[in-house]
Length: 84
Image 1 (cartoon, rainbow, N blue to C red):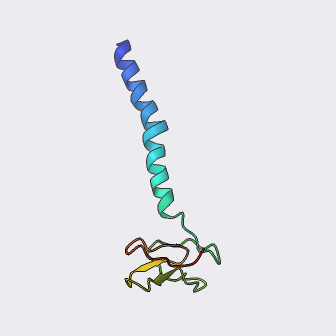
Image 2 (image 1 turned 135 degrees about the horizontal axis):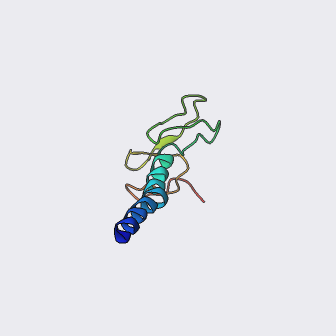
Image 3 (image 1 turned 120 degrees about the horizontal axis):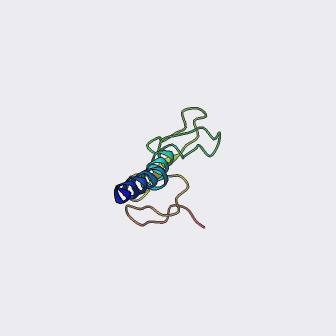
């Protein structure tokens, strides 16, 4: 009976402290991005902020893929996007 009790306590502790925290962090990171101009929450797929129209992404001059405005290098073709 004691072994069953210890297993149940272990499962509860795992759920409360580890499993729940891991999924909480995943869901928080989805909505963690904010507009650099107005701090409005934005999705990663947005090209402009829907509130202030701040440009969030631009086309890479080399490959034409949309890249984040703040990136230094294109992750698709490795070209330098902006000078340091």
